[in-house]
Length: 194
Image (cartoon, rainbow, N blue to C red):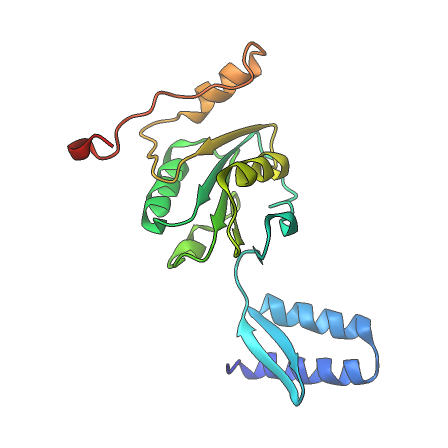
């Protein structure tokens, strides 16, 4: 893959730093290359590049780390293994109706066609992909553990918010009378009652 001259020059400097065993400088240069959107790969005759993913991609669920160091009042967590267009629509509805202090966590299981998924990323929307795939229960447990908030709402990617369902859910949970609550769902596809 070709890269801009600035990235190539940083990679050349990194090779020189590695030859001099200046690992700190080599790491700093690798990080600069990553900030420009590329990963540098060491090969026998120098280096190659690949585009850096805008979100973490790991092989297994145990490799997943915190989505962010920011703290939110609540999080909506979505597990998706296909139907990315549905996911895009669901996230758009969350952004329209959920309060700004609600993080959006998206866990992609497997290797579906991701398309426009990176366009969702913003200051409260975080994505991670588990390439080898993961079961729903294991994914839900990881999201509960890694969420940057005390309250976590797990939402199906086919759900569309038509109003603020988060605020009343958090109010019910924070009353201390409940440990789990849910809002009333509805049919997505009225024609076949699904």
